[in-house]
Length: 573
Image 1: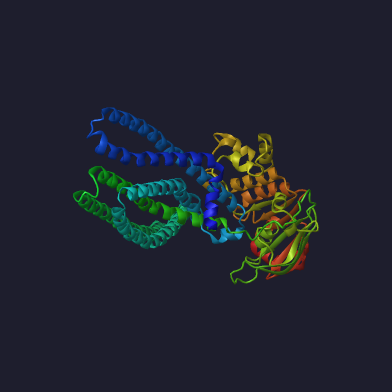
Image 2: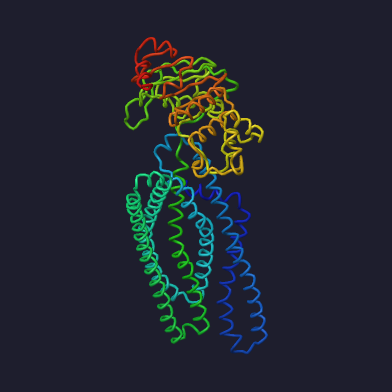
């Protein structure tokens, strides 16, 4: 019931428009139910008695009613779908907003294609359900009840015969419904899988071509495509059985009515007008069943889609604001990791155990060490992308779990090795650092990041498109745009996570100058692989295992001739 209540809640903003559509649906049904009564009068009274005035009057009346019904049907077909699309848009907006509340862990474990499937494909099915569901239920209910009352008042014995066949039809429909629901759930899952594969393959198309793995990708896709096809094939098999079986039973039902009704006329239990009226109402009586039969496929797909929508909406982030969380305003940038331990769950070994680290305000501190010791993990724990397993992290003496996520992250600038560039213009990508910034501020940030001169050489300057994931830019250019974003954001705390490790030496030197400017006056944590880039750090911490093995300035560590010095000389060799 909670699922139904949630679904009905999306009608609330459009209840007036929805009421109009339902009122028109009721009007359409009323006109249809009136026709058999008028037909009976024509056959039994107006035609035999040559009442031309009544024939003309009712013909004109029915014509006007049909014009009105056509207008009603237009409102149902157009505005009914408008209600459905508005509801779909609301659901998509809610889901998209909810996705932005989920933590990194959710995205670590979930394929992008599956998210896309739920955000687009599943909700498309819901639109049709939102429109046709209430309409079909109302039309079917009114038509069913109205036809039943007319049938029972015309000839109750024939109505009982009709119901005996109807009971078989309903039993068959209920029997097949369960199988259809199961197969359409399977279809939605297969749809998500093929979406995920397509998204993954297209995103990695350059890597695929580099390794000449086109055939491998095609084979992988064909496997999922085949699974997708088979899931639909199974669904269509059950749907065909459902439609063919119900259609056959409906035709048998009408045949029984015609045969027994003909006998009743022969024995004078009914007259011709009553038989025609009964047959018309029997047809109307069957219409709701046919409508619901046709609607069942749509209903199954829509319900399956809404279930998957609700499933994702019910997912909760493990990173949330505390009930009494406070705002972090104008922090000095004093950062303390106190006895911090962390693991990614799923039975994995701890990445950090009992790490204590203090970064005083305005200091530039570097974390170095071999791969896998937890340097990047530290960089992700401070903005609270993940929560510590044990211990605490504080800024200016305040535990970050007691600070609102928004204010915490607003005060932290992060430049990573893998810079993400959005499809769009150079301006839009820099503006991402602070969307409310002016054009002048964007240009100032670009100059500080030493990218302005390059941008001016582009055909459309700041309005030049950068391509999918910035393919029209070099690695250094993308990195400078990332730095410009942080200049525009202007946070008091800066984290540089392997920000230059993928660049060539010349570009690295140039980017480092921009990063040095960016770090000036800010509390800065540098995670580095290349030790030559952090020689001027106020303090360098060499991590080994789950602890800090050495710490000091570059010169102090070189003089110590320990792990750091050994690694530095190996890199310089």
